[in-house]
Length: 410
Image 1 (cartoon, rainbow, N blue to C red):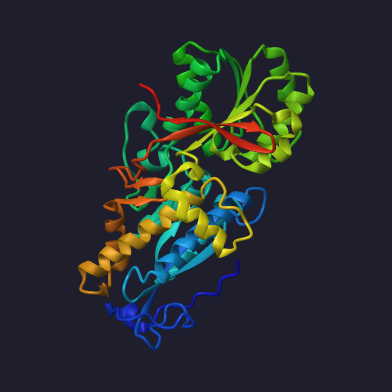
Image 2: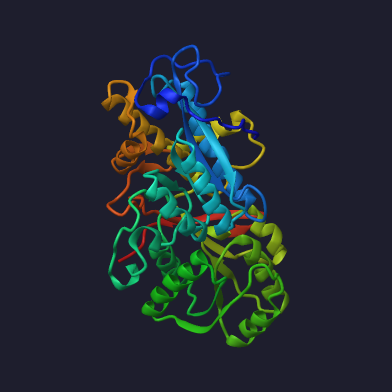
């Protein structure tokens, strides 16, 4: 969906508080007060909108856009019109950092949804934190983003107070998958592979810790270059390892071909991964032999949640050509958390946006608590989602089907 270029906010807003009255015309330029005296608040979105991971990125963008449109239709914040500015990071950290700089330079931007990739977020966090601009990711799962680099050693420190997420972390997702595979699927010997990126390596590490703790055996480990698509060397290792399952830390563009090549070698064992695998395109890439492959993903299936019924209907009604995909509900909730925070700031300031609107919105995000598409939305002292639910999915036919939902066992 094409978005108009957003221009700078009026001098009145840049200089200080601006009284918010009735919204201006929908045709008013972004950031202008318009005939009705309203003002525009921009919610930035950063995601891979092109490239291999665009199926997930476009779902993030569209879902955040839907939240903004619905807030406007409801006149949820009197005098405020919300708009989305979506930037493409192509799943690259350098692009993400450039986008973060661009978004912070636009004073109308009071919150950011994204990115998809934890490695991209690492390059953005300080930029947003320095600008006191709230960032809420619907998809990042690396624990270090909220709890610091030594979280696994028990030294949890929140490095950036501007960072939040609506998705749960790999500190939970990896062990959750390990418990399912060992206790319920009966898998005792695993070959672990990752793509050496922040998300993939971290997820594989937390899986390994829990799997071995349960008594499972790691019969081999290795890494792949996800850009290669020729995984014959590690496939040979898998074949001779005696593994009854492969666990992969990474995303679907490489996971699909990896599964296909493992099966083609004559090794008929399932490939299992995390939320980065959960997209219909994985099944397309993995081929017919991928039946029975598994993945975990954050939360419960949106389609099964009564709280998501309106979201699904409204998304379809809006006519987006791309699916909301794995993180649609979490993206909507991320954008709505920004909207709720803006509403609190305006309500607390007699219908005005204060001159330090970003700092005030950031403070308000920490305290949001509402019933969202994915359930209760709130953040703990680290900025992590308080919703810890996860779901196991299995390839059945041409897509992933739900196996079971739950939380990590003690």
